[in-house]
Image 1 (cartoon, rainbow, N blue to C red):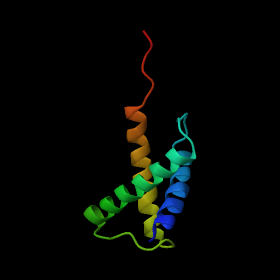
Image 2 (image 1 turned 90 degrees about the vertical axis):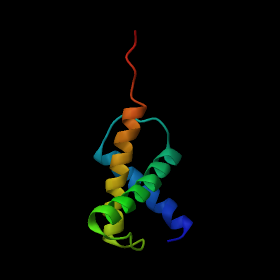
Image 3 (image 1 turned 45 degrees about the vertical axis):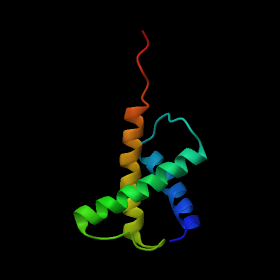
Length: 88
């Protein structure tokens, strides 16, 4: 896949991940795209390590499922790191 495909995939996957885990997150469209792109890479690593499969092309179902899985994990980690601090 080319860089434009990764950006488009990342944006769509980031939106899907935020829909799966709704909440108040900062950032906008760029953060959502970065979340999806990083999630796609993480999903590829998970797919290779656990299932022994690589990410396919843009229209491959396993590419989308692994990228969504990775994006949800990245979003959960992001929320843990940037969670609201208790006021004193």
